[in-house]
Image (cartoon, rainbow, N blue to C red):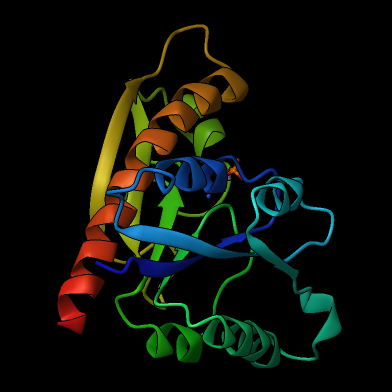
Length: 196
Ligand code: GRF
């Protein structure tokens, strides 16, 4: 069985990318991480990927005049790498509708809230400010609507009385690292079945 060739797109520390790379070491895991693309050349995650023998590429939006031109540059690179699935992992750029359409049903994102609650940024600050008792994370398929695609998997954590956004984020992040590999395995298996 050949594995689903997967790109991970990051912008920063890349801990979810690392969790996917670690999961993909298992011989029976259905996805292979073939490249890591970062929107920032200084993303910490790039060093980890390179040290693990994964192709890396920094593609900065600052080098492109429009969102479409930027997305097209990413698209060209991913297609040159024969990518079949994309995992967004802390990738801080909104992808254009054309890009998303070109990868329909093959892009995953991890978001640090129980969607549809708290789309966008500062999810933990907002949950604490609202007095939420439960927080969590979601893996969803990417559609043109920001954080709006169908949810595949979620995990809940309690919000504790003494929580700060930082302590809550750390509790949620542990669950992100658990569910993202599961969700990518689901998509990869679907891609492999589609090939046959
Ligand atoms: C995670 O909390 C993820 O849910 C959000 O951005 C953060 C990225 O963290 N989309 P990392 O770069 O994967 O460590």
